[in-house]
Image 1 (tube, one colour):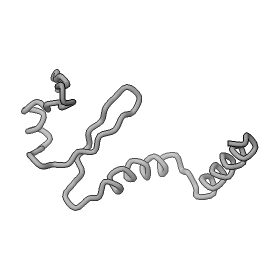
Image 2 (cartoon, helix red, strand yellow):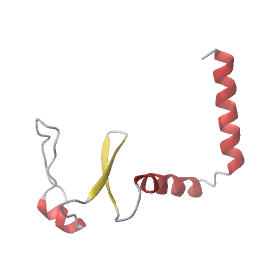
Image 3 (cartoon, one colour):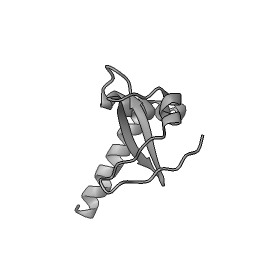
Length: 89
């Protein structure tokens, strides 16, 4: 489904009715908004779901898909800290 919307002077964007109906969006629904590349993504935050868990869900999926281990994360953090200390930042 493709539709065209405009950004208002207040920065508001109207989601077309067919899209809202298809996605089951109703007044008061919370949407997480983020950018990835040149895309703006809207993701519904489900009732009772925290914004943090909504954000971390996609991160957990990516970590699992790439088989990242806790040791990998610790090594990356140590590497960045070392580089930062060496550069004097």
